[in-house]
Length: 313
Length: 284
Image (cartoon, rainbow over all chains, first blue to last red; front, side):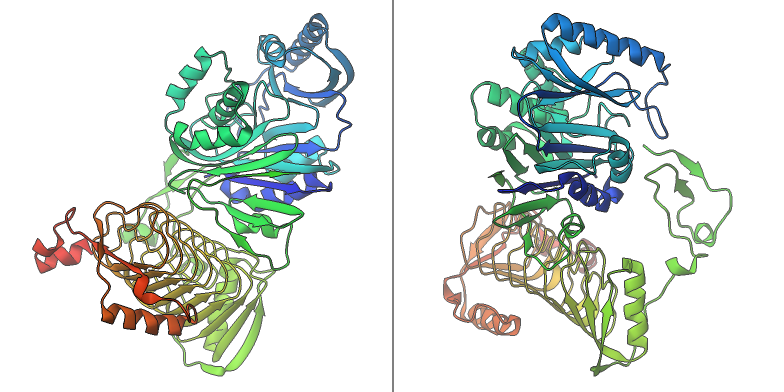
């Protein structure tokens, strides 16, 4: 059982950091282990934002091995050297925690090759690359993660998030959601459910050159959609294919720079409540998530089995 | 998986043969402990006056507090209780074993008005998953939409949703009537054993999958029939009964009932009629 939430403002920006925090906090009972945000912020859209980690959070509840913090600095130096050798120009760098960074940079070449080289450095994982995507995930509830990364002021058009209860993989950042749709910029995925043909799909996709960072089944959705899009499918086409290509029970959200989508498996085994109006779409695993930002009386509904929807900003 | 450790202090629950383990960890499950009064609460039945009405704002109450408050108000003779600001909270109005007019001004979360026996409930908003699960008797009317597992395992009473419902409506239904004014999702009537379901709109795939018995009436299109669900001819008594039920439900006034599709169990999967009465009881 995990909790997922998402919202998209159409035609305007809002304080999506705080809004998503309220929604995820309401779903805390569905997933107390880690929380993740994929915020599509009002950046200038000129430069890439790369968020990456050089180690794991080894705090309370973590399943990661404790490391001396000095190795984080060494790995960060190696990342800087690699960025230089790749020709990426770092315009601004922020150290958010001892193990995670946010870089604003200019880069014009292939992101797949770029990512492979950066992630060849031990324990380094790119959490996201995008011109508006700010992907943050860490151990703790929505409020703790919001405070730790100072997300309360982030304004943007849309966002998806996840409150995770670890089941098939560890309590760590690499297994936390959202997952970046490597190697596509600005693509992120959150998922509630279990996928039962994970290994078959993973082996097939790895043979096609796709990369997996964790053993979390949900990562498959991001990689699956990314591979479809790499072969020319639209996001919605990829999502519709996933209804038969992915086996198991799932409700997932996927977001791109200018859109937000949801898909529900053909057995409708995982919950989702949806509110839709002309200027706002909000959805979550439970009604209380939506009520946390829309306390007045509204009309909501459960999407049916096998339903796929995509909204534009 | 959470660690399991043995609870050293023997409780009454253990002496009664109940759980002897507790789970530890963040996602710990706290088992029933009879020493804690709040976990060992019996709902009463009271003489209530329907003309005695009171509003109850549950905005700042959790579900346990709200449900206890409802019980307390019934014990004071209030027969009409209006719940304000339910805000999608879970498990509100469960276990009401009394005649009562219960009105929710807003929407409920999961397991709303479950295990009730007797009240008349009106919900002006939407309900989440498993609304009125295990209802024994009474009437529940939802003005908007409902989530999945609507009326799971209901045993009696009328459960009415004027909007659309999610998947597995009437799963494991054992009696009573479920009426839906809009559409219903996949696996409607899944493993139903008795009772009737009326859907005025369309239904999804696998309608009546593995149903043992009972009847489903569908007014719109059917996505597909499930295993062992078959079509049966509509009779005059079916039409008359649906007409009466829709009147009670206050929906479908001009609906053409004669064109509805009637779905029953083929009884090929489970040779129900060949069972001895004691076996039949166990199966149901």
